[in-house]
Length: 440
Image 1: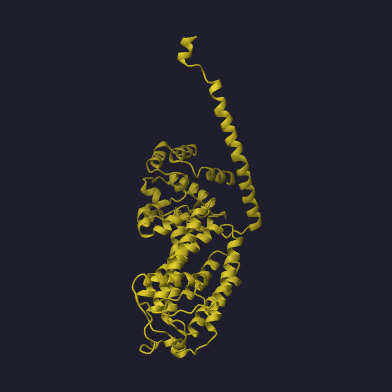
Image 2: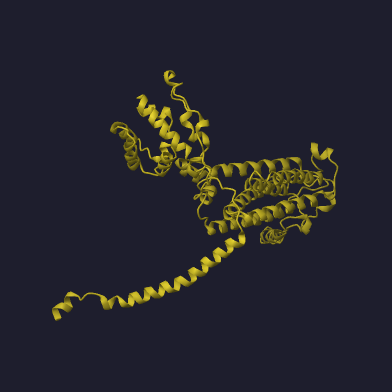
């Protein structure tokens, strides 16, 4: 059985024509093999067939059905997650589905428990492109820069505090103000950021992780820059009546209106909007940027570390909950700001990763995905499945890249010199032309 299943595994990647020949070698008649050839069934597609599929193809003879189902079961016992493409096990065990024909329900149904899976590492992306990672970083940087610029405009558009008191809020009205709570929330964000940096350093697929983090962070803050400016809310806490000092009012529309916010925005960008670094802005309420960063860091840490790190996962979730609580306790954001931030961040994270993990399987709708999700389609175009939890020594990887670069720097000049000598030697060994032969 092991030799037969190993032989089947070797034929999973065969083309339909080659695979039909393999079926003939296993005793199937020419008419049955012709059906597989007409339906363009290759080795991998063969592993996904079930009894209903075989009957739809016109295969009704009991002996051939039994033989084919046995071969399919052997194929499934030697594959895992669709040969590394992120397929769920239900697609591999579809042959266990009984036929609609009641006369054969009990005789031809296979149990999924009989299938033995071989746990192999799925192939997510063989060689991530560094320029895509750099482009995602530029995208995140520009989004944060735009957010800083909009924060200045939102601060200028802050409603008059004496005329517009804080809006009614169920949580803030019943939660006492804690002066140090906002600084505690920022310390939690820094702690999660350090954990995420450690995961990036030791993860084997660190480039994919960094690219996804930058693309999601840039997208969410790009959305936040829109929601901050379209509706200006009054300050959520009474302590902000004295702390919110607007910048100098703009008297001219141009060039002061364009220049001054840009200057203030680029000043705010290196400080990342953190109170710990002396930044104090008001009006950027819908939705909370601090909650967005804390939630996103928590989701990325739990997603790209194995389930055996459950203590770390529990710790990051506790930090996430306390971070949101401290933001509310500081009365720096309304409850709706925190709720919307958690909802948007979690939904975008989950949907982005669902699309990325199944991007290879959804190639039928490639054009539609490029229209509706251009950023995801561009950055995740080479992804073939779920990113595995693999960790490596970063020093060893750096040494390997250094040796590779040095070898390339040495071999490239040698190749150019050899090509130069070959080009110079070519005319001397070239055959005589017809004109030279006539002259002779």
